[in-house]
Amino acid sequence: MLLAFREAIRDYSTPPEKALVRDLTAKISSFVSFLIECRPLSISMGNAIKFLKNRIAKLPDAMSESEAKSSLQSDIDRFISEKIVIADKVIIRHAVTKIRDGDVLLTYGLSSVVEMILVYAHEVGKQFRVVIVDSRPKLEGQVLLHRLVAKGLNCTYTHINAISYIMYEVTRVFLGAASVLSNGTVYSRVGTACVAMVANAFRVPVLICCEAYKFHERVQLDSICSNELGDPDAISKVSGRKDLNHLDNWADNENLQLLNLS
Image 1 (cartoon, rainbow, N blue to C red):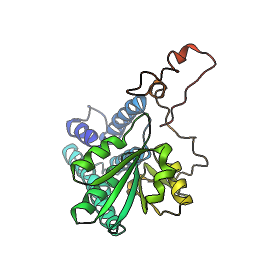
Image 2 (tube, rainbow, N blue to C red; image 1 turned 90 degrees about the horizontal axis):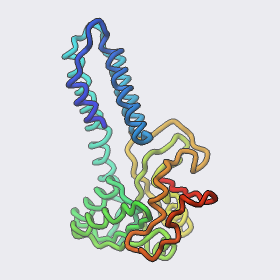
Image 3 (cartoon, rainbow, N blue to C red; image 1 turned 180 degrees about the horizontal axis):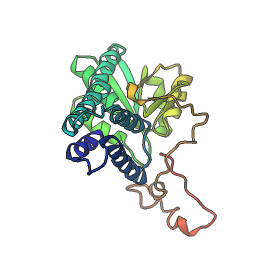
Image 4 (cartoon, rainbow, N blue to C red; image 1 turned 60 degrees about the vertical axis):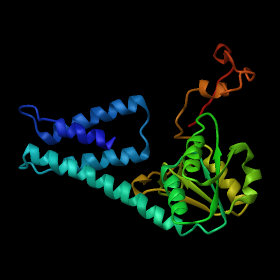
């Protein structure tokens, strides 16, 4: 998203008799409205948009258009470098110190920073096994499984309904996050709370890997008030199982609704 905004700023030119600050802010707002129509914004995207609009608002009136555009592009590059790239490197270096030889590490779904942690730990010679827990309908864990196996990591793959069985073997849990709220609540893929609670019941440490740009001052009092609604048809069918057709034509039943929380 930030790279798209960077390109838009590079191609932007101020219309006659208009101020760059106000007109560019309006342009960015129209882009954001389009993104919201396509899919609800994540908290991290909202923070990045707030940062960009704040930088636009602070541009001096005397600054030329070319200088202002160059300054904003530099601000975006610095945000990506400091808040995302460098932040991930710091998280990776710190997280690897928590991994010991012989550990069995469990992760859920697909998290880019957790993937980088596991790959880096393997590259520096740590001896461990990875348990990848997955869930329908997205089955994102399969993507992580293929990537880690290609890198030579020892992996076990299972679905979330079997987590209480596999947790006996696990020594640490690494989870990614979409956001961390001001009261310490972790906002992540549906099913993450289940994994964390099972780990807590088995007294297994849970480590949340989250960059600071995903932190938010908001407080969420329950676990479903901000969930994104997914396509109901995604949970009505099981890939590769044509015999499981009990929910075929479910939309024709006025007394039945399918709820797919993302």
